[in-house]
Image (cartoon, rainbow over all chains, first blue to last red; front, side, top):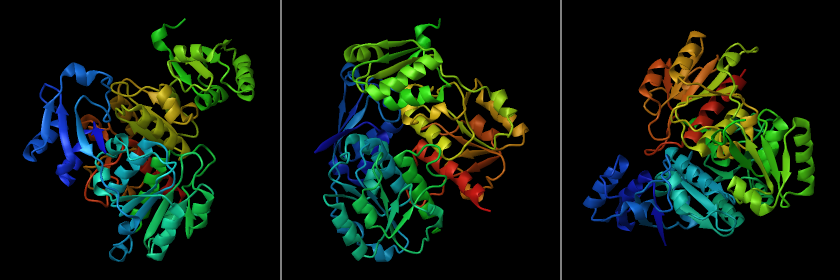
Length: 246
Length: 248
């Protein structure tokens, strides 16, 4: 499967990590601006096909929005292979304070993308996603991640509960995030490798997933006045869990 | 009456209902179509009566045509310009504002909405924005804020630099969140009155704003590459204020 990426940062990261999977870069006829110029240079030196798109064809269907997510230039990139879940925690002994993530049925590709970007920033060791009832690893996920998908290994699993049991066996501790948890994330000890579980945007973690957790945590103040967006909550949790270890 | 260019549509159960419940941003007109459930319709009619807003029953298709969206759930509201809070009023507020979040040209409506949502949920007192290159409170912002735009004061000023200078004169510490800073944000004392500045998605904070800030701080990174989404960075900074103030 191939993806059409429109964020130059996600294309640049793919060119760095796996240039052979970048099949084509499409640029508008005028000189590319900013990061796209860097993409063009890198593509040229890696021998990637560069195609000049006529303005009219490129503009069709894409209103020029002032946003990092859209533009007239694009690239066709092969999907990154997901890893077998057990490969994600193979290095657990080398990272006794490492952090892993599992996304339990997240449905908004913007959230998944933003979480990958956060995961790359905080050196998360791996991300697990559920195959069913999750948004797929689409081009939106890659573009919003702004390169994060290239540097964090991920696994797409059919049976999350089964995978979580395996993770526990391998030495990971399961930390569920839920508004109902009594402990704030800053009170979670950073003396062991945690696998942090993030739940669905509306319903949170599933009962079965929660039952497997060794510990749960929340973000204070909780619940009383509104809630947080799932990717923002994930960002606060990951920042807190990586902060106290340093 | 206002010109049509000053109006915008918001739609969907959550966005419209939260706005009506808060009663701060009064619609010009409400549209209800058969797709709206009876229970929801009753509450909407009650608010319309109470706030003296004309309500029109229409077809699902007509409602889609007028608000130009399909996912309206049988409910849409035509809105006048957003009632931004006056800056002076917040400056003289009692108890005083002790946590400001300042946005320097956040252009993406998803980010702007998510930031307002975080600010509200984490107890920030007010959000301050400029006008140039800054997303307005539009229907997308209402949606991605999960209705929080109705509950948190949002100020929009012509000159952000002047507003920032005013805050400094009032003794408020101004902290620029920038990747280029040497100091980590958790090393900065955020317990006293503070204004944290978040920059544009691509370009960060403008030089003139950076120069006006008393402190520069970054979100400590543990990986080797990358940057954070503006809404995520803002969330982490807001939480840091909460965390420091919670400790005895």
